[in-house]
Length: 289
Image (cartoon, rainbow, N blue to C red):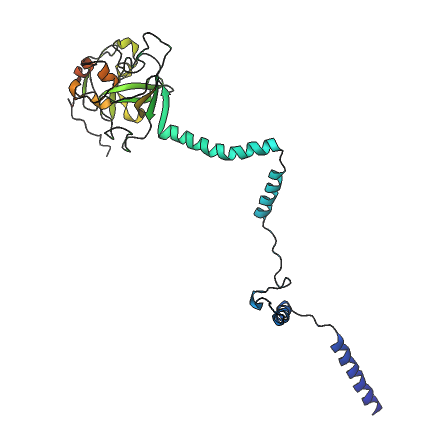
């Protein structure tokens, strides 16, 4: 009996010690109890919106966000002159890129050098050989619409820019006088008395009277249309004017407005137009099949 009673007292003591140990609450239970306590307070927020700090562990920042924060700290610590230059480049770099794209593919300003297009361009070259015209060139590709012009294709009379076949690093400016299928009565120094313009090519010449002052198709032959980069549409300096190339084939009385060609009088370069037999030969695209 004494032994049984001792065992009973020992179990009771163990139970009492077990009950006296602190209970470890889970994160969910701690959140629930905390929400209940807050709900009892007047003006307490909705318990569903309360999240215990212990229930939501802090997230470790990613490598990218750490890199961005480090970059911002280093950027803010730069000296004032360098920081000002960096801020200016933020605006200069996009503007420079847009400017380069615009000048290469939309509109470009060029200087006309030499006497080959006188008197239509560089009209004072004979008196002042150092003076050059500044022209505006439409760089839009063929078929996309020529600015300030009534056509979307190459036409006779256009003043175009192209890479010279004689010197590919040089951009030449000449007038288109012959299209595919036209027969051209050539002038010096072309060895042939006449030349038929083949498919996808044009015949270009300068406006100058002396053929020795113009390096054009009479020297290197018809020019491929793929070499043509733009069309001259206006002169910006020294006398601003619009070039109405579409009046090239029109009679003098039908030419509209004021233009260098009309100012130079009736019959301007009529001898050039007389050397062109339009559509003398029917040309077709080659069949590669």
